[in-house]
Image (cartoon, rainbow, N blue to C red; front, side, top):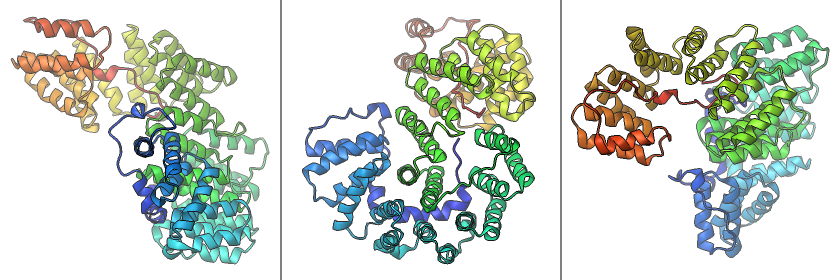
Length: 594
């Protein structure tokens, strides 16, 4: 997962940054569309101007940045003097990473709307990239951005002074940021500027202050440790990395840099020049935007970071993560491909890219890609775990359990971060009818991560299904629901466990809650139909079964659902019941997350 500044430290920064973006950007995508990404129409150039405009709105609402950029530009061709269309096309081009088109449109926009702050910001970024630091400051001082003196303007102005070799003005500019919640952000950039311009004392003071203010952020720990290493404080640098590893074990960036230090290599600074510094400012604000849910603004800031510094691996990964959150796997794959081959994050990006291929339905291609990765990195447990997840998704449970075996064997002392390895291997064992092994893995997962709701749910339901350890099983299921009251699958498991024990009214009560949370899941609808039948609500039961039938249930479940629609349930409950909804294969996360 890409590094992000903590929301507490950047909340005010983000508010100011978004204010600088201007109303036009926010209006470019007014609401989230009700359609899924798959519903976005294919790009068809040559439709009417109004058709292109509407298509751009739909694509933008679905966060299909490429289609939004194409449709917006096509709509603008028919009405090139329209300021609103120019602004939409400009914002869409930036969000899609098309700097050439974006900067051209920014010039047109400023000519018609001199106060447009986002256009001014983009042109300032271009000026910094060209080493035109005075021109950048002129753009930043013009229009609404100059009046607001927001954090984005302040950071970029400071870096423009740094680019001109003027540390005094650069630091004075940053020190105008007085908001306590922005102190970490301010000191981080002040430390980077002081380091770049040769003031080691001030650099250490500021970077230490930023790190002490937030030790949970990768970028702050990384920058401070690199500084310490370059200034001969190797053991102190190692401690910074070690402390961060307690928060996020096995992070590839931290492990790679620790290996470099141990090999006697000196770590390079985070920032090489003022252009990198401006990119770092955009990256930090973009990361804040992703944390706050402001996807479009975040995407534009991150794209500007990548324009200024194309090798910014963490910015590329943050873009990819943002697309993952938006369920746009194709865009996420393209963003992961932006991570340089030389980056310590490249293997991680390739693993995530393969997992996204699987979400697009290309399991064979994804599995082949991951097999290549494990062949190249046979001692990487994350690679083996990801391969196991794809095999589990394809219901190749024996192959998946073998991959998890290899991942677990590579971990000398499993800790809390490794609970998913045992949980997922346990699922493979349970699905392949090896319950004793599955039970042992579920218990091991709980030893590593007590009260983990997914494991409580799976193990508790399995015990109820077998009629063993019933008191403990119901405690587990109730605890899982307490921990995840809005997880429809977990609530469904508690309801279905009540059904299995003949507590039909309690089952219906719980399953009604589950259906509110997961109305489109065939298993939950099927379960509620069964519970309704047992409490003599038979019209409603058939209604739920019909819903389950129409929601593309598993092929093994469909004949049973059709039989119930036709004949209802037998007088006595069947000895065999469908597996719990929550026991379906769970999507893997790369580093053992839930």
